[in-house]
Length: 277
Image 1 (cartoon, rainbow, N blue to C red):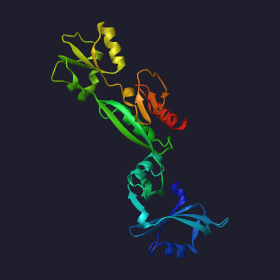
Image 2: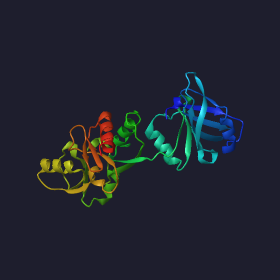
Image 3: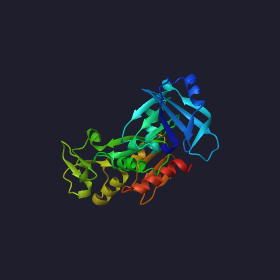
Image 4: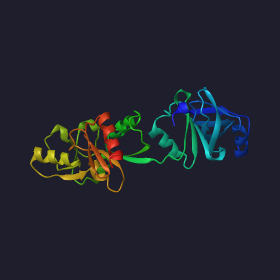
């Protein structure tokens, strides 16, 4: 619901079904109110209400349903929470399973959530640099309110530095210098097209392997860190892919965006992954 449809009232009675039944007998509610949050100290209860037809600002409550009582209701207060952002609400629900959660957030707006079923999205990307670029883009996309879906993000970073112990050659080559990667053995960066003085193992994606062959006219020992090759069996995933030049491509449960993806591209990709089924 929208926070403007929620009435919050402090009461001085225990929030039992019997007491709420008595309270509602003569209750009047503002014309926009569709839900009520009752508060007594640290206890909360939530209701859905119906009202008499009236042109007045306040109408008598003609019917109601108790949605939760204190034992089934948690309270969260955080002024950074956008209470209208569905992915944020889904994350809160996930942290409070089987509970109704009353939330007081940004601008002191209040809503409550109940029975939100999350949609999980795995973000798979290379690091360093850290945090991963795609992880940041997805966070920003979900914060825009342009994806009104209960998406919960799970991030999986493929750390190229942790692949280095698998190297058996004298030297190692990383894709680009901006990563800041280094090694105790001799190391090179593919984007510098260096003159090689050692046998190397390349840590990179398939495009990196093709670039190496083009530069040096030979094969290379290769450790694959392409995010698209780490998605099997992981549900809905989003990855960057050098084969995608703009927009996005859907491949089963995986959506692929360009290596230089923008926030609008990521928004469109996520919406397509979940809505175009």
